[in-house]
Image (tube, rainbow, N blue to C red; front, side):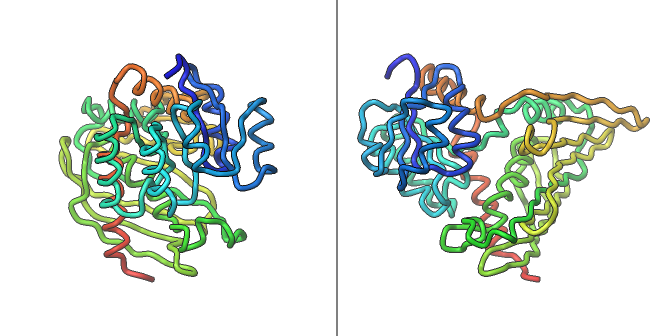
Length: 328
């Protein structure tokens, strides 16, 4: 491996063009050198910020190119497992968009291949790299807000006017829970170390995908048990917020999932006297941090903040919610 980790991207997704492609290009110790796309025209937004980019019209050809060390995979959900495995078999480290699989059991195959090859494979769950979430976890562990009694997480947007979107299509692994439930579930698991004990879900579907889901139940972990509530929707006005309600205070995270796009990443603490404290991170790019942490793990062998075992736990929660949901 060269001094800089050399990256290729499988698929010219809009998200990759707007966020992850520029993040790889900007991240210290990393270089974006290749893109595989079904259409040369789709490479133009990438070439605009990364001149000299090598463009392949075949995904496998990119994986077999010796001039790259790692690949980022933003393909539709139903293709994640297949191409993650192909990347590992080709000798590449791989960072795959969430959800990395459509069932927790599928992640076992990736874990086994990761261990067999010694390569790094991970889900691109970027928020754990952001200091907002690292700080939230520190505050909970410190006991500043006391024993948690309730946690509430909300994430919504409205894409009803885009029926062709992969999130609105069952054949591509669409649905709100798989797209944004990964945030409302996994963020709470990350911050508290808790796992679900019992959950009840009511959801609404359109054309075979869930467009609204309300999950309630109980979670328990090293800091005790607490009630949990989350709402995800692809048919409501944009909103995102997570609140941790303890005996001695309330901690609210604003713009917890898309800081810089939705708003400013902020942790607000309110104690029992009503005193407010705000901690803000106005200029942090969590995508760049994710790429830099990935390269550091590859180069120096340091632990990656979001290992596949953690991702499997979130996928198991998603599986359980989808399997037991009551439709409304």
